[in-house]
Image 1: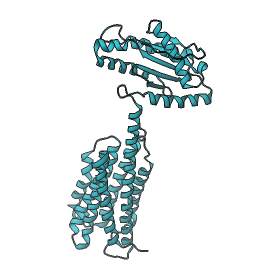
Image 2 (image 1 turned 120 degrees about the vertical axis):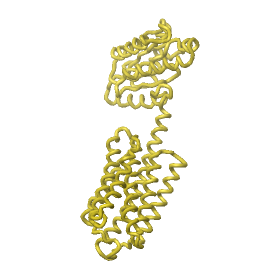
Image 3 (image 1 turned 45 degrees about the horizontal axis):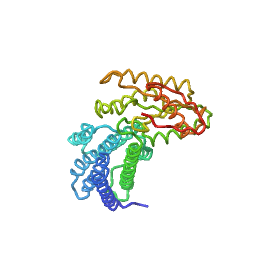
Image 4 (image 1 turned 90 degrees about the vertical axis):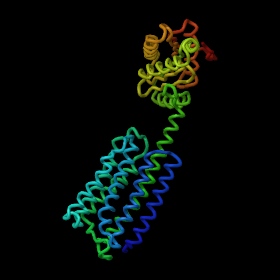
Length: 390
């Protein structure tokens, strides 16, 4: 079945323009992610290049060959830029304009301008190169992006491969021989480009949405001052770690840490000093945590650390390093920084987070009552509950 080229061009122009306008609306009215702005520019430039290249059928050959393909190069550059920006890098303006500039300079060479095979080769090579660059931007940042990149990568690589194959199949006769093989391939080219444009718009919007949701979830689970997990994050991650350790029959230790005399510190030196103390304690403690451990701020000046595969002795060693390093920090006044730590393990409480917290809380209360700036181990007593401390 032959595809009608003029009809396909008209449909392509309408669909790509519509998707480009909708993408611009999504960027302007909602997420404000620059990735959507560059993707919108790519789609609208694609529509413009289709219109300009189509002017060849009405005799405007120079406009079609020179201006139409320059716009197409800019379109491909915007595709690369949108993926580059999504990966967290800034636009590379020389690279954006390089393709269009090279095309213009080549068209000043009569031998190139008059050779359809040469123009097809350069156009196809440039399109494939920009697609591969876009795929590379995503691939090298795949661990940091934390969203599904596979659909976009597949589309980019397919588009690059398609334009590589074009070098061998496109004879460059889209209008001169309506029923010839060149016309058939040109129709397929228009159809493929339209589908890829729509597909990339959809997958890019999905990636932007998924990343925005991840950021919102991260904000909901992190403490805004210290940047570590909040109480909700600690409880969720702690429960997961305890289930895993219970399945493996591994001992887990919990440290509950409370900064000493925190209210007096705030009263004497102001809230900025208190905030600084909280941030410094978070930094020191986080540096002592392993990847599998869970650390969070569970109250105003209270923190908890869940240590995987750790018994009482190992937990007390970690707690002592934290206590000593925090107390030795240079601060506004000597002796103002100290922390009391209560330690409990699953050997006493089982793999039950609520029970571990209760036992560690008892030990923390004991550390406070014995003079602060010390570590105490839990001594479980039936029916005992944690008490308040200062």
